[in-house]
Length: 66
Image (cartoon, rainbow, N blue to C red; front, side, top):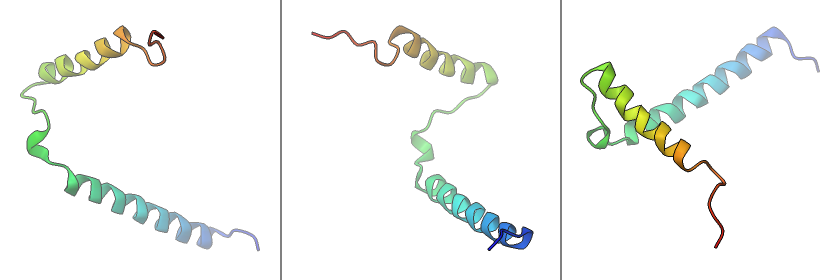
């Protein structure tokens, strides 16, 4: 049975609905008070830089074996 445009549209709509449900569940389960808050773009960039510095200092798989 070939995949028609109508069947594709139904499958796509179902997948998009499932993705939306997962996203809604994640958003509602998030404790937004425990998340960092930024007052300006520079605050966010400084926060993001800390993650970049951490990843450069200890790249994955670079742990020394004892």
